[in-house]
Image (tube, rainbow, N blue to C red; front, side, top):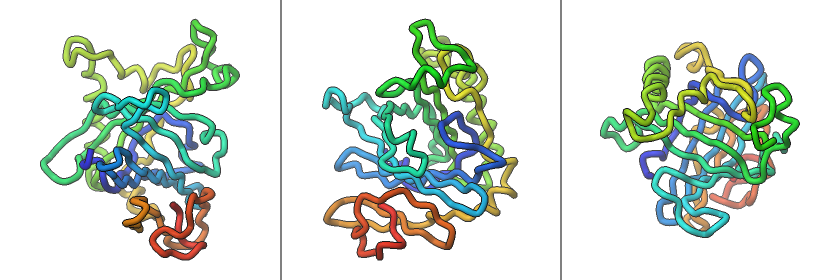
Amino acid sequence: MTKHNGTWYEVSFRDLYPWGPLCDCQQSIKYVNPEKGYIDDYFVFSCGIFNYISPQRENVTNGGTGEKHPNGIMDMYVRYSDFKFITHYEWNTEFIGFKDDGKDQYKWVIEYQCGTRPDLPPELCVLSGKASDEKCYFTGVQMYVRDLEFVNEGRQEMYEYLRNLGPKSSSSESVAWVMDDFGGGTFPPYFKNVTTGHDMLMKCPYPCKTGVYNETTKMWGCPTEGPNMKIASPLDFTLGGMKKDNTIV
């Protein structure tokens, strides 16, 4: 769990957030709290001149039963966001792949989701058609790398990893379909690359480079760095002793 700690650069995704050219530079800044069993995840992206921070939490405890999830599965929800729609749902995230090169942080990691609590409105699947049970399911995958210089190579490694997952190779279900199957009951109907490569990522503003930790609350805050920051409503402006206008927690 601790090897998820750090800054991650998203290279490809199927998710509920907008993509390029409207929005790009997606990053996930994770602060792992193994004692409490959760990860504070600050999802950061840019749309034009504005930078967005969406605080998320991943928890090892099943919110419905109170029991601990199996290794690699976590409850996830967005605490606050300017994209209000996404705050009404929670879902399970499964870490279905990673590359460990012996450093404190994995070299790359793949996160996967299927379904939400509550279900998505069936109207969202008007393009793909509803599933056989007349429902519409959030179908998501996110691919992240640790190092900017590894963007293109990491993307190809993760593509290949997903294509190789299945009953014969890993005694698991096949999941590569999440990249190109937008059939009945699945949403959103797209799979996108975040950028065209390393050069574009180098131009991203990276508005959440550092974190502020509060020993009492065991929570992290994400201070803003620069103008034009769009911040979701914070839970507590006082963490880390930061001023009201420059901390998101």
